[in-house]
Each structure stands twice: as structure tokens, then as C-alpha cells.
Length: 117
Image 1 (cartoon, rainbow, N blue to C red):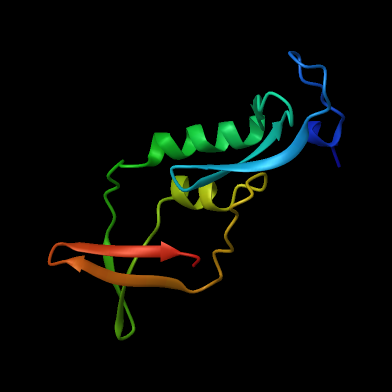
Image 2 (image 1 turned 120 degrees about the vertical axis):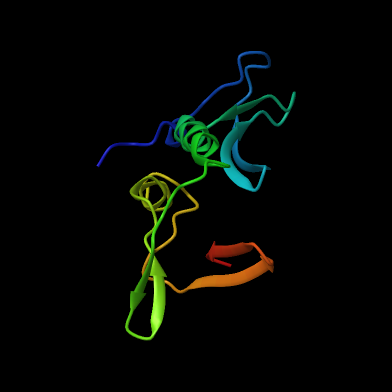
């Protein structure tokens, strides 16, 4: 298993103080950060930045899926691109696809799937 870069001691380039681990939320996404207690300079974890960029690439994208009949229910398949993003092993916000998914109508033409809380 590889070591995480944030497990190392990181010194602030401005103050020469040791930075502390913290978290920051942006657009519903939790980033791990190293923050200087003195000048409040922050370094975002590169894995979280990469995951957020992947999220931005698929957010708002329309996927064409088929509605299928399975027994007495109807089913849609979730595109692999979305499943891979949800199950990406390096993300803090990892979700288990075996968990229940919440489904609700937002309006007459909008059906919403929600993974997690």
C-alpha cells in the first residue's frame, strides 16, 4: 500500500510553520486540506482535486439509458462512467453500490436517484 502525501509533515512556504490536516467543503464536495495555523494558507489533496475534476466532467451530462421491464418493476442501467466515479477507491465520499438508492419525483418530468444520505 502506498503512503499518502498528507501523512508527511508539510511546512508552510510563507510562515515555515507546520501545516495541520483539515477539511473544506466546496459545491457539496469534501476536500482534504493541509492548512497553516498562522497564515491560513491551504493545500488541497491532489486526489480530491482529481476526483472533483472527474465529477465536473460528468455533472450535468445527459446519459441516454433504456427503461427495461424486470419482473413487476421497471429498471434503468446506470452508465459505467457514473458507477466508476461513485466507486472510485481513492475518494472520501465513496458509496457502496449495494446500498439502497433513494428515488423520488422532483416534478412531472424529473425522476431523481440519490446515493447515500
